[in-house]
Length: 174
Image (cartoon, rainbow, N blue to C red):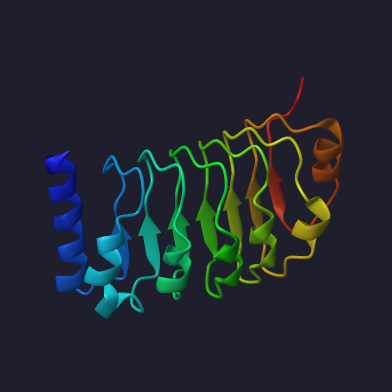
């Protein structure tokens, strides 16, 4: 555990000292986003546009992540055990890409459809059966949706097969 904490501290310090625009806390055995990180990064939160929390053991994401890193453009949360996102994810004004692959979502996080800048949504390898295709079609920037390896119901599958303003990747049922 101490090694994991030290690893997180090193990565955060490097982000602050080097003035990086990305924060990589992937593979850190995190079960939540450490609250202390918000304080340490306070001086550089406006610079950070890419955050990776991939391949941790996170069950939930703090809503503080979205209110603190308001300039975030890319968020990678793949490989965790998330089942939902905080409602305030919808306030992200600059987010263009979110990776939620290989988590435990059984319901499509509909707040994502409120993010007008969102271009890419990756939900591959979850347990989602239904997708709000109509709401996705109304997203002005959406170009790409990956819902491969989800147990999509037949209505959702056929809705995704018709032409949209975005590319939908899904596992074809044989």
